[in-house]
Image (spheres, rainbow, N blue to C red):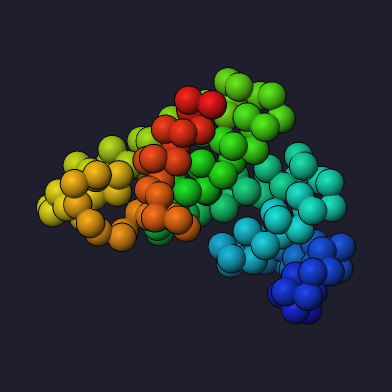
Length: 140
């Protein structure tokens, strides 16, 4: 029910259903992310940030590139609220993932943020890398 309500844009029903499901057991990462978005759409910004941070923690264990993207998203949200110190700390986390990826990958052309390579890994919509987005946000 929560997923169907979310897909249909019924964020109130979606958020309530995700909350109920989360009280019974852990939600999948995609469900947590949808819950965070629904909370934000309802104006529950603190809850949206709290759940978004849970998504980030879970992503750090499974998908470093997605974790870096989530860190940029959280950093941007904090910066837009005027919370510069918190926002910058999230941007630094995103950059840290980019550095870790660079050190662990064998092929330099495949590195996120590598301007010489043509690889798509680590890229976000519009062909921008997570590292490039983090740099843009940090410079804002």
